[in-house]
Length: 431
Image 1 (tube, rainbow, N blue to C red):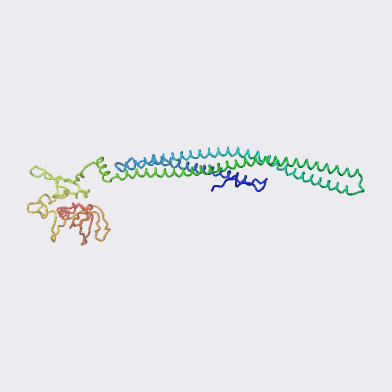
Image 2: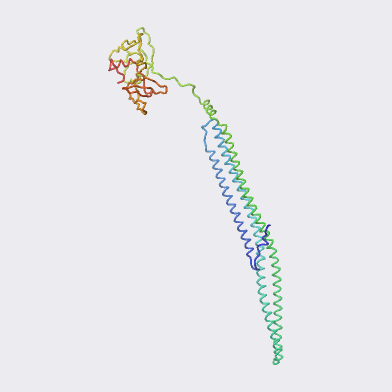
């Protein structure tokens, strides 16, 4: 059951205005509440606008131009959706500001309406108070005059009972009693008139106050309703914004589902490929001298020459490795029968020991063993290789110690160079 303001806010006496003041305080508090809601929505609108502008700035500053393929499409879609989301938040800010304007107009309209009613109540309240004051004063005067008239009439009765009083004295007492009664009658009339006027004024005031209470209650109901609807709409706008944000993220996820590693790699290969196979290795070419028949001997390759920067070349060649002796004729030329050549005069490239092929190699760089199965070697040392692994680590033997060394640190030495070093130390290439 709905209670009514007009039945609940009356004073305890004629001069009591506590009920009216309670209503005015409620309306004042409601006005402040409207202002608080406006401030909240304004701050939220500013936050949404700033957030939206930040999102747009982020989306526009992000680069990602170096990417290609499906990942680039996904990243571009993400930037586009971020910018779209930022614009939606800016639009949300504008809609919130429109709600604030509606509340401001409503609050201003209620203020004007309430002000008119308060002025009407005040106009009736003032004469009512004045008439009430006059009525109370006329009542007191009326009571006083009646009391005086009663005393004067009692005095007349006493004089008439006394035989010694003169006729003149009796007439004087009677005249006084008559005048007192007349004054009492006049006071009574004035008192009655004031009461009647006060009654009419009170009826007008009560009627106006009752109507004002109804209007105030209606205003309060409308205020609660519009604020409730404003907050409800605000929540709906935020929920809708969340839905839009999720839709944007879903668009990005849909594009990301199409992002494929193989597709992007294939696209990069097709766009930027430079060759299908590695280039041929560059080998050192050793040119042989002219033979006795005037022809040029075949070119053989060997990497040993890269470690012989101090050997000067002449027209005499030592075997197939290009070791040149400038001070002595080297017997180790093509055929080199003293070097343990084969029956056809060619040099033997390796030695056989215990069924294992051993080859001599020159160390090009220092290497320090890092593991227990590795062998430390120094630049310029000659070591024996018994096994060449496919992983680049070769089994080496030096000074009775065996271990693994990196094959890229070594270069092969022909058996001719070893014998040359023993026969002619001054031509030794590994000093």
